Length: 230
Image (cartoon, rainbow, N blue to C red; front, side, top):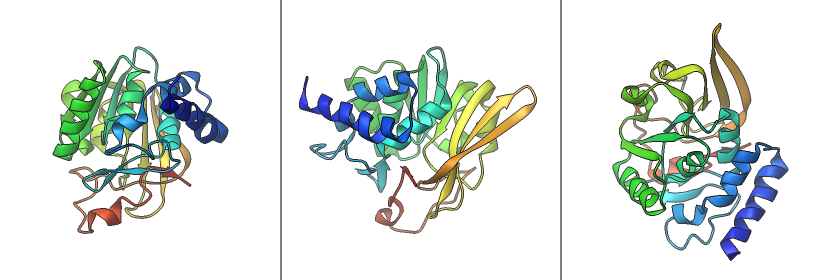
């Protein structure tokens, strides 16, 4: 067993299971995906209990928040998953071990290209990366059984709700930019949309037609605390 494998096992035990994530499929997926492959450079800090920079003013989310969102999405082996904010591709890789198909949208071109190349090199054949405005989702590919949004919007974009299949779950932080937000789970039922509040988080803003407008702050100012729980 490699040193990095040992680090993954420790990460799952101390950062994820210890904080209450119980879904065995999520835990097993987190044990297998090599987080160091999704962090630029040596990846020495890949298993640190915090978000890490991946370039373009963006970060890879804290391991716990990735696991918590995936657990909340209740992904089954036959599910089709839409991820908004692919970043380095790490969360999509974990979701790819849980679902039949994952489609991830990333608005920053260099990140989308790098994630696409990385996932192909690592052998993830059920993941597709699209460079586009994530706030609109990917309507040509809908409907989705689960939608995960790795950026906070002022509200849940109607376009994303429209792409949620019957019984589907959407997990997304909602709230002001550059301040604490609430992680929400919305479930489409026969009676309408059910909404659960999963707690306080801090994410970068969802930029796009159905999110926030482009921020004028410098990149290092808006990656602070992205993808963390509070």
